[in-house]
Amino acid sequence: MDSETAIQLLEAQRQVWDHSYAYIKTMAVQSAMELDIPGVVQSHGKPITVRELGSAPKIAPARIPFLARLMRMLAHMGYFVENLKDGDDETATSYSATLMCGFLVKDSPFNAATWFLLANDPIAVDPWRSFGAWIRQPPAAAGVGDFPFTHAHNGKKLYEVCRDVPRIAKMMNEGIGRDISGCSARPCWPSVGPTSTVSSRSWT
Image (cartoon, rainbow, N blue to C red; front, side, top):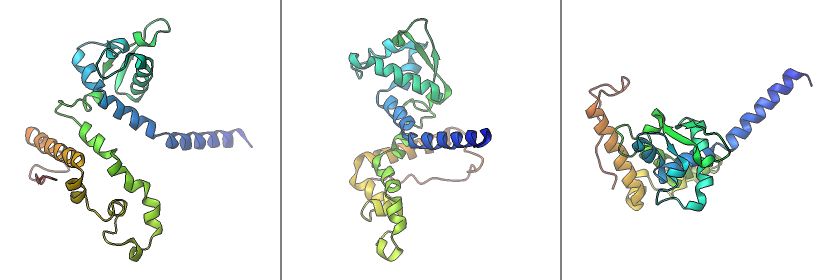
């Protein structure tokens, strides 16, 4: 095997491994939002150390070393700027927010946290988990509501799931409401146009 082929194989293998563990990045961001880390860092007004972050009520003191690892990963992803300190104490490293972090702050006008959580809720992920099974079934055998979503949720459409699962309805209403208020507060995207409208129907 020549060196060029070996390099191509290594790159292909790297991409496969990257796809295999892609969920780790998503779960890291979700954990940060559950702990309100973006809001705490942004409201601090200056770089905040992991030790200071660990003093929040939601974080057990014994877990602070693991919080340091989470912050390092989030910084690598671009949500925070890492300000390294001399020495081996990771909890002394401080972090400051980036523009990406602002999209995860709950009271930000550009808040995308609700949609992020909704997109990664089991209700939204299950259709992808069962997509292969849906593909294998011919339409006649797939039953009523022949779509991946309805297949994964026993024939229920999105509005029916919202009716039965309050947390999904809450996230849908919050997400759509924020999108509508955002368009009314600033120009809509060029591809949408100022005359486009979005239904304000409640999903409950």
